[in-house]
Structures are given as C-alpha cells and as structure tokens.
Image (cartoon, rainbow, N blue to C red; front, side, top):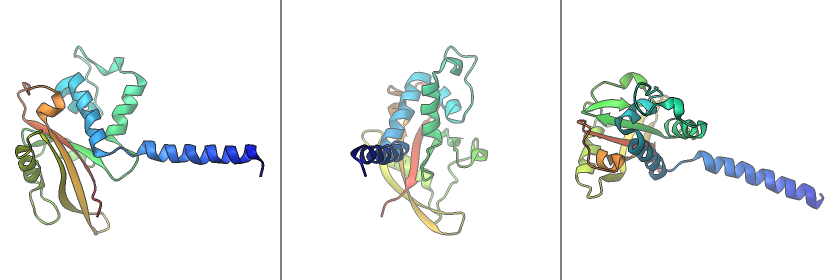
Length: 182
C-alpha cells in the first residue's frame, strides 16, 4: 500500500471517528445548550424545544440561522438514540420528545418502573442542591422489549437556565435523561 493510500485511509477512519464523537453530547453540554436558548428566548424556548415557531414575538425563528436551527435539533433529537430532554413547568410536562402526547399532562404522577415518583425525586434533588443543578439522579424504565433499564437524569432549575432570577411566573426545570452507566 502506498503512503498516499495509507494517509487517505487514516483520514477516512479519523473522519468517521470524528463523526461518531460529534454525535454524542454529554448531559452537561446538552444542558448548556438549553441554557443558551433560555437566555436568548426565555420561556419561548419551550416552543422551540417542541419544534414550534415563536413568530409573533420580537424574537422569532424566521431569523434563526440554519446552524442555530441545527443546534436546536441536535439538542432535541440527538443521534445517539439513548438520550432525551424534558422540561416540567407548574407540575406539567412542557417538553417531552419521547412521548409528545404527554405535553400538558401532570408530571407529578409520573413514576419509574419501580413505582418511585421520579419527577418528585428530581425536584427534591434540585432543592437540596446549592447550585440549582442536580446530576446522576437514577431511575428505572421498562424498555419496549420488556427489559428493565437504569437511567440517569441531569436537571437544572429555572434560575440556572435563565441565567437570572426567574421572573416568568412559571416554576420550571429542565433536564436530560441518558442510559445509566454501570
């Protein structure tokens, strides 16, 4: 094999590895991106995260650059297939991409596969946090094929997401859920 072919093969392999790395977004990075959206758009971010336009306001999505729309899409629908975001406001789901029909329903009644109230657990973790951020909140789900899967949530309160005191009139938090590592 010539040096040129070796170099081309190495480049293609590295490009492929770079693509895989680019697709994974750790929970903290995902939360930072959500924070950027809340800092810029306030509670209209809920609409953006649900794929809706926020036209009719001073800040509307028609002016969003393609790269910013792609960035929102990478936060909402990651390519890893193992993680998702969610937001709860005034005790109701306001963002829940895995099951969009849950939006607007009572989040406080949600339990994990073991019957534990996991939204209440997240709220308790936030209340006990001095930073307004809680990490590695464990809960279990049953997968579509009937297996028990351990998951971890990372949640940030509204003050952290807005980067200021919450003056929106809504009590809310957002988080990301990933498959737990053993």
